[in-house]
Length: 334
Image 1 (tube, rainbow, N blue to C red):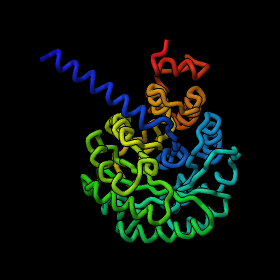
Image 2 (image 1 turned 45 degrees about the vertical axis):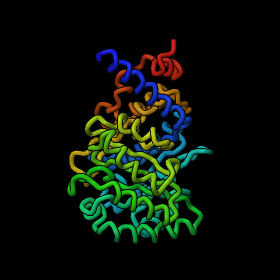
Image 3 (image 1 turned 90 degrees about the horizontal axis):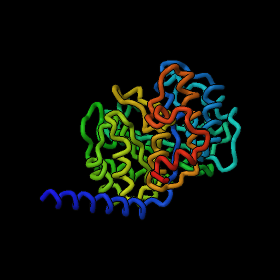
Image 4 (image 1 turned 180 degrees about the vertical axis):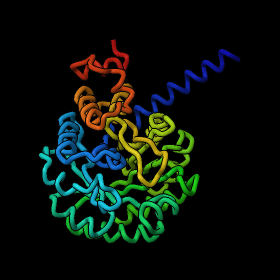
């Protein structure tokens, strides 16, 4: 019996590895640190620090960097310099610099900053929608449709977020069928991609699989992104569960920065350094220089005067000058 259990475990591991390798030849990393990562920080981050962080992330090879939010500074002071950030950054060809938009007023302000992509963000629960948007889910979707219609008319790409896809700090567990319905509506609005966010980080591999089983009924995996907060330390295991469905895009935040002003107890996002190391271990080439990425994480952590939340950043330290040497460790290559 003991031999049987060991053989079964070995077969299961090989089977999972094959499914992953077949499902995800490439993974797109969507960096949210300069926006989602910083929005909940009590210490205001000056414009020049935010701009330098964005530059360091692009130098590391990240091609999608969410830079700013055009929400009311009354509610999120940290994002009050969105216009200055977007007008100051030095744009690198081939790098995408999206911004978060709450309504038409925010969109009109952002439009003056030479943007090409916006993100809209309905909630996956009524409780969170009321706290975050001060309206119901249905009302929020109507508002965001106005924004999406105008942005598409202006020739911009629109990305959708759905928050609290697994659990809500006010409503508790969330029905996956409801998330699938919201996801479908966002695609109907013209979103090219929808990111599913576990805002409070309560998800597990099991709950993520239940969610994905419903969402793939309304969208193909290449149109879905996953956005995990690591509150319970489940970020990477949740991601692994999602990758088995053929997901191609993952949101993450340098140094594990993050949190939400409307979700008490929610910790930071899945750290980009940890994600890149994890993917290199799977044999997925992200084309990201992990040494430079670690430097970017330390840059912002040092300014905030707090330790990085990335375990890879902590473990690697200053031991490597070439990220290929780190890849050898991640993939156990001799």
